[in-house]
Structures are given as structure tokens and as C-alpha cells.
Image (tube, rainbow, N blue to C red; front, top):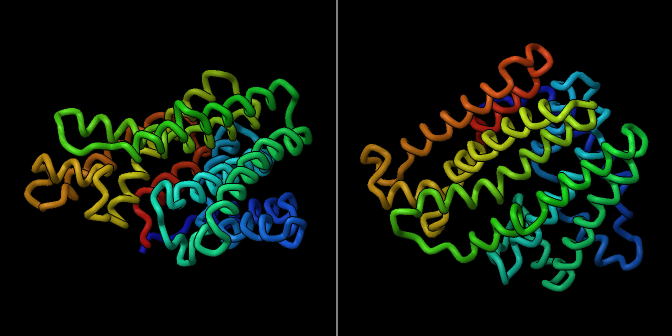
Length: 294
């Protein structure tokens, strides 16, 4: 069992308190909508993405909690994407984080609207609460970062291609990696860039931490597939490697997938090799993201 980094536990407390304060109470009218918004957000997952925001802020030389607004915004955007991914018209999942999915409890229409509202709140929080810690120009750039991440060239486009993925063909592996780059890695990269921006980092350091986040996000997606491999999921690195006969004869591409994830982790860590002790939390989170246990 991989131990949870102390920094991640702290990050969970910080972002949970902020989300509780900034999300309308569950009994706010219309109550079913707000209850649906709360359902997947509390209790949430590991809060890895907001933790990366905090750690990137610290790595860029500022107190971690200076990035509270973007950390909350990233988690709100992530939760919206999960609610929508679970819908019957998407992946049609019945369970998420050990509980019924939002549409199973509140209906498809309410789940759709709850996701929409969480996405809107992400931008509101980033703009409104960001006023307290950074200059207007930084907030505008951060809003642009989050907008691009949420749009058709990243999260939404990745989900579209995931839904329409056809297995087989010589280009199956790059197509899967392209989907993972947009659907998973884009939000990791956005998280680390936002943390750097809220620390006052320049363009070069923001790009440096963005590259770290992207490679870590790709490694994380592989680790996620290894933890919860569904033989019916054709849009996964394991399935593609198995179809190609990869994995050293293990029948599922597991060996090759693990090797690919380790390579991506090494590449991610190389991006921040010059940041010294300031990036300690970022390195610990990276190792945890790849080697965590269920």
C-alpha cells in the first residue's frame, strides 16, 4: 500500500473547506439541483488535482495556499466532467466512488444541469476569489488556461474521441494517447500551470510546470487503467498493447503499460529537476499518483 503524502492530506482539508464555503448549500433552491451538485463533490476523491495546484505554487516559490482559488476551480471542473462522463448518453456508469452516480439518484436532466452549474462555478471561483491573491492580468490568463482546458481541443474533444474510438489499426496507440493527453493530462497540466501563475511565475516556469503536469497526467491515466482494467474498454493503453501482442506475453499489455508509465514519470520529474527542495511536494505527489493502491 503506497502511503498518502502528508501534503495531499493537507491539500484535501484546504480545498474541502473552500468548496464547502463557496458552493451553495444543498438546501438552496432549487434544492434537488444543489443536492446533486454536492453528491459527487462531498465526499470527494483524493483531491490529487488541487493538490498539484498547491504543490506547483509552492515549487514556484509562493505559499501553497495562495493558490486556493485555482485549486478549488480545478476540482469543480473535474467533478463536472465526471458527472457528464457518467451520463447514459456517455459512459452510462451506475457507480462512482462507491456510490450511485448523480444521474441514478437525481435523474439524467438534473445531473446534466448539476454538471453545467459546477463548471460555471469553477470560473466564478477562479475570478472572484482570485481577486484576493493575484493581479487582474494573472486572473485573466488563468481564466484563459481553464477555458482552453475545458473546451473542444482538450477535455470535451478528448471525451468525444473516446466515445467514438474504433479499436484496431496501426494508429491505435497514438489515437489512444491523443485521447489521454486531452481528456486526462490536460487537466493535470492546467493544474500545475495555474499553481505557477498564482505564485507569480513567468512564462518559462509556467511552461516548465505545464510539461511536468502533462507527462504526469499521461502516467496517471495508465496507472488508473492498471488499477481498474475493464476488458471491455477498448480505449485504453492496456487494450491496445494486448491487441498488438505487447506486454511480454502477459496477455494484457500490463508489463509494457507499466514500463510506459514509469518512463513518463521519469520524464515528468526531469522537467522539474532544477527546482530543488521547493518541488519536494510535487515530486512526492508524482510518485504517489503513479504507484497508489486502491
